[in-house]
Length: 93
Length: 93
Length: 93
Length: 93
Image 1 (cartoon, chains in turn yellow, blue, green, brown):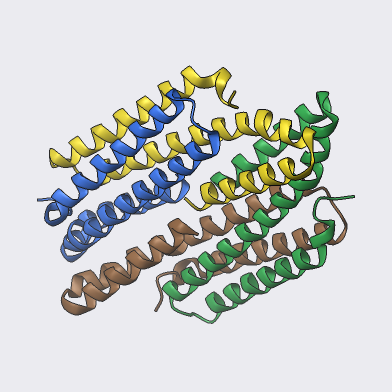
Image 2 (cartoon, chains in turn cyan, red, yellow, green):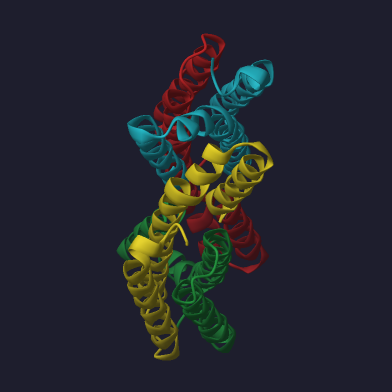
């Protein structure tokens, strides 16, 4: 069981769309498109990726972290430290 | 002529790598991999995209903006307003 | 009881330091210091603020969210939705 | 002469406001206010700081960078490298 099980199809679909966006951006550079237009598309892909990350994080908190916190003890400690580190990486990325 | 002309092969190669990273992330979700590992890869893809964006921006400033600023007048005004807006989008993304 | 109770003195001290940084930045502008030096200090203040936010979030997850998740039910639902929204605001800020 | 000369009063006023925001956040923690409310205010202060940074950067591009680019040569090279580095720090902060 994963936190994102209920959203799996949606998460995969959104990631495939970001994959298509990045592919299109590489193509834009290959086609010598204007730098600013390329930058605009990179910002859009970044926002899309962060938005998928927020969905995954939300699911993770609501399932894995919630379950571990209910169990308590070392399991809870570990899951909470792990999610904190993941959030820190996301905030910095 | 584009700002990124001298770095074109490098920019395309880095974008293709990010495309591969995002494809692999979608596959991870499809394979029910652990949420935190997926999030870690999303943060890495985000950082890689921002780093390509910085390279493109640097080239754009050094060529297009520099040339327009040397011309002066409305051309310079427009290019400077345009790059400012692109930086703002990048900072927020 | 708050999540940050154990770190309260440390959190307040770090926020007072950021307050001092921002005060010094305003003074730099008032003293006509060079734009790039001002920007460097703003980036440093931003990073310092995000780092305090991560400490507070960590404490919040380990105390308030952990406790609510152990209780379960609506209390857990609400605390988890609330922390997700706070993380999303932080990621975007 | 500085890039922000025309906006100096506005920039100082906005920085003083952020200073007040951070002071109020430290007070919130000292008063044991709820973690999530503190985090919300930190996100707001971060956004306000980034917005001042964008104003300063805009002024810097329109004055210092524009002037240096018009001069050309090493002066232009240096100013462009310097502003690129400042933008990179801002994007990461």
